[in-house]
Image (tube, rainbow, N blue to C red; front, top):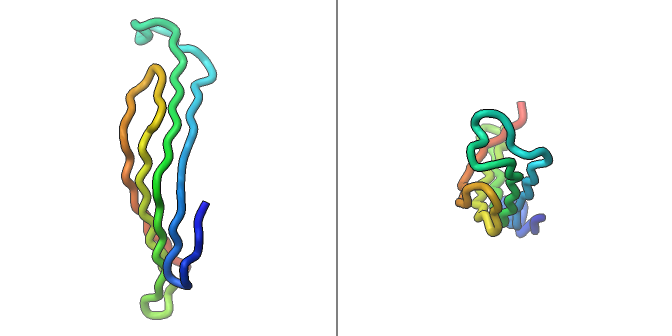
Length: 85
């Protein structure tokens, strides 16, 4: 979800939910038949501009895992560049 501030900048909130639908099994499931779940929220920003009349967008986002069950909890920072051709 985002808000376009001007033609170049957009800011917003990103998030995800992961729910494991089947229990762990096999020889690697030494802790039992657990099901993992995690959800995360964080800010995002997009900057759009042109280079030699080629439209470019740079997206940066950070998500913080707020709730985690039977899995690790952490943060993710990512960036992407997209362009039309």
